[in-house]
Image 1: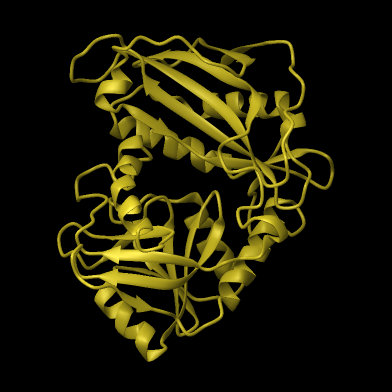
Image 2: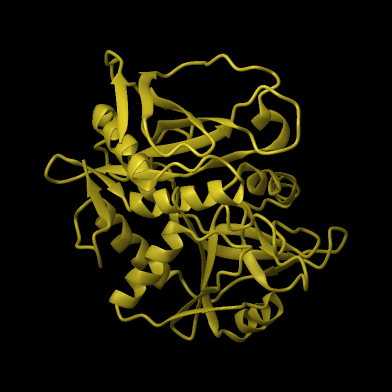
Length: 359
């Protein structure tokens, strides 16, 4: 299936409480070269984390053939490491590669590489409350040629970073302030919206910079056709609580099939909470916030799990005056879901299914 050569272990990385997300790297990473169409004889190395030599002509730097995943490993009560739903990430990684015409890593190879990496790096998994080892599988086109087209050669990585409490010391949750601007579009029908590729995140950087001038934490994007249906945030899926039901935009090819999104829907159903997936008009959402029908809003993703939204800052276009909308609820259901979800990740509560892959 896959042969992995392992280096001598380096000391456990030192870090302060709640390190800034994505800044404290685990001491090792996995490296594997792959060719387009390869189905067997995979060979990888676990190496000390550090720089690699690349050519300036590396295809990924010029034409964007780059995909990745993000997941977490948690210390479990029995002393093992538990990776949260990695098989879903393996499937999505393969589908993203297919959409980007890249080498497809077989799911069983992806899983074995991930298992062996986490097992080797297990000492780096934090035991502090609300901490975890964030895992980043990455695939990049590595042909040294300046030509538009699918690369023949690719490099696959798995690296880890120490993730602290997303909400900072003490875990006090500050509801997010999120901008909605009809000028901004993240994805288009027939495009790459449902692939986890670097280009989708690059598209959100300018809108995020614009939003920060209005003291907003994130941007909620609308569709590219009507500029009214809700898609998702720059790196998170979107939910609303309407008349006690959990409502989220339906998957439409422009929205990432988030593992956290799907898990929240499954968890809510197991708790007896009604769930609805449908096209969501932002114009109608504004009316329902003002009428009190919508009581809570939240974003979800691997990093924060659930981040309550306290305010929407709405702009008809980039030159209009902003209007602030505030749900009247107190994030009670959002925080209940966050608490239960987080306990499941740490093995403190039973999941609705086999969600924890123990190493």
